[in-house]
Amino acid sequence: MVRHSNASIGPTESRYSIAQYSASGLFRWVDNGFIADKQWLYKSAKTEDVKHEEAWKTRWHDGLKILSNISEFLK
Image (cartoon, rainbow, N blue to C red; front, side, top):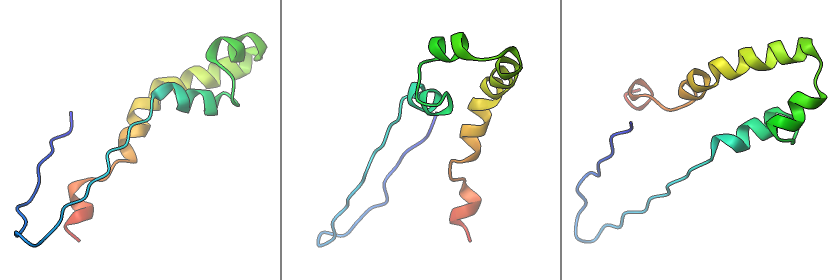
């Protein structure tokens, strides 16, 4: 999904990198008030279920919006 490459560096230069990963379940757990989906659904009211379902449908798109894009680097 994400292309990666490195620019060439000189013999006296150093390269450092950090790779991070977060499981999507962690974000759902936080969104649920620090409980699992099953527990949240058991405790929630019907009106909350509808709102929760709508948020679930857009979660992937919302996550993509917070990633950096090329226009940010060209400024």
